[in-house]
Length: 232
Image 1 (cartoon, rainbow, N blue to C red):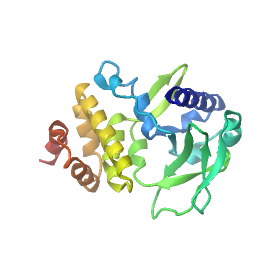
Image 2 (cartoon, rainbow, N blue to C red):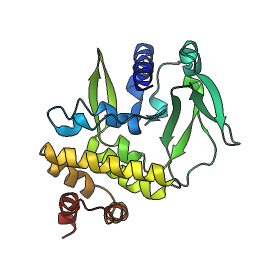
Image 3 (spheres, rainbow, N blue to C red):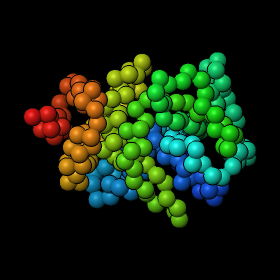
């Protein structure tokens, strides 16, 4: 299953790149952790990053900047993806036996409780809070002959420490928390504690408190100390 998922994920990225829309998309969610292999070359992260899931989440940071009109469902139809609707408000997902694609946008102001239309892509998106934390600091990793945009690992990990506390399912909450810990440990191993501190220091105190609260139940003293130094 993992090999089939990986090959299918790569083919989606190839097609998005060829269609000219990959530059408008940030790959977020657990598949980011897989592609961080490139960032963490030379660390023990390579031994831990067999972390994949059926869900692939794509963040459209600025829908207004999309220039190419590409019907995404048609683009992926021959791969076996079909449109499904989540909930009773018409949120679109693209489903395949091996992968499930969802598109997200930043929730602004008071937010919206209905799908956000993306007519140039032939789909709609879910608006969620906290996603600006992922899009505000990104990296690019080379995949074959093109580049994929990912949240910086520090932002990704600290974001996980916020959202795992909002999860209703304990298994997903535990997975988010463990992923965050592994990535932060790898950043420290890579000598990038300063980057963790900079990212942590850049966010509102309310978010900082959520992150520290999320770490209280862990025994990762090095990570806790790295973050708490800023509080002094």
